[in-house]
Amino acid sequence: MKHSRINAYRIMWLFVFFDLPVTKKKDRRAATRFRKRLLKDGFSMMQYSVYTRHCASRESAKVHTKRIKGFVPPKGHVTLFSITDKQYSNILNFWGEKREPMDRPPPQLEMF
Figure 1 (spheres, rainbow, N blue to C red):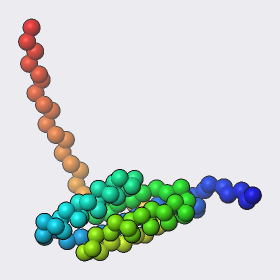
Figure 2: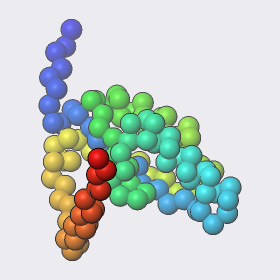
Figure 3: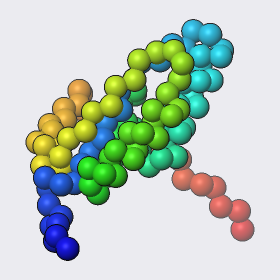
Figure 4: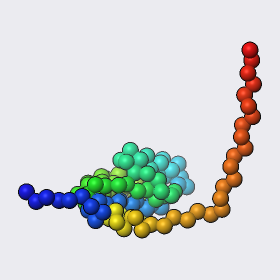
């Protein structure tokens, strides 16, 4: 039996990018159903319309790809993209202005 070592080149990340119509009620429901199924399948929202999922192997990524193909909405555009864990580690994220902290809530009134 061949010994396969787990490393950053075998572990995969699966990305789902999508642009789905939401102008009609039926299309909004289909888009919502699609996002919920991605979440149920273990994906996390990276940005709106961009979801990611860690997969332990290429085979696992293929299984999830096949599953997603089965529930793609009839309208819109969906792209699947897979990269190795090593490639994923090179992602840089930048955010705009620092958000202001929320005001502290007033202390609660205690009645004795």
